[in-house]
Image 1: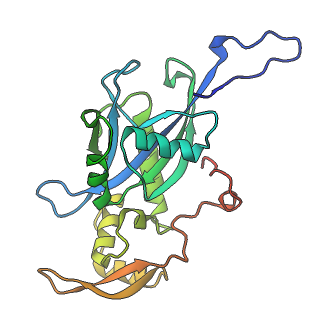
Image 2 (image 1 turned 60 degrees about the vertical axis):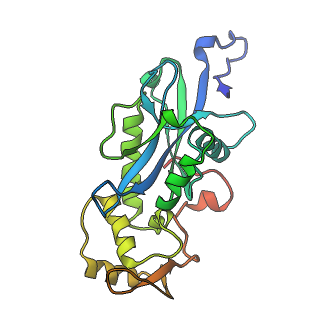
Image 3 (image 1 turned 135 degrees about the vertical axis):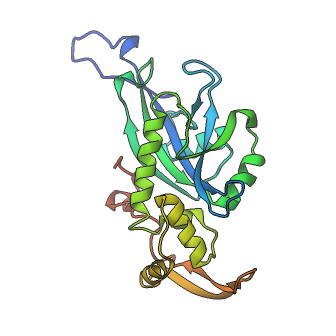
Length: 252
């Protein structure tokens, strides 16, 4: 656990215990799941039931304390593995939440948001060495009251995801390596919460230079559908110039 405090001015009294600020790392991790009786996916996320105060018994985002010897990215990956067993396909810093009243003690949370592919989500969580009684999936649009300010955090993460899907290939983080245009459209529809015109969608993505057609087809009850893959020369998500130089993402 990392503790930071404001250093006293020369000759001043040392900081008291009440001045200590603790730094935590939490992650909103999105995946897709098809509800019973539906062939269309919806956005879901895993939550962890708190086993101690404050907010004992309430659901919360997975997370933990930042270790003094680890980077923020490493802490986000570690706490996800420890609490859910999930390893995301995409992990990005979201924002810093530090309202004074958000916790009984002074805690600043560095929040990440992440993506896990639909086919990976259930197998990862089922095979995880975690307390599965206290980890569960929830639809992003139908969350219970969460501990701390975590409802607000999820709402902000959803807003970021919906905005980013419009100008990056971030949807690939929820897809297998090869997919049909219909499967890609379903991901967009799940994220945006609305239906998209198939013909217009096809024209837009085919003219975007982000997709590469393969020689393979998906077969089934309908006519065969061509499989595509993303052009890996295009970044999954624009992380900005700071990331290019190897620094952690700024909270944007």
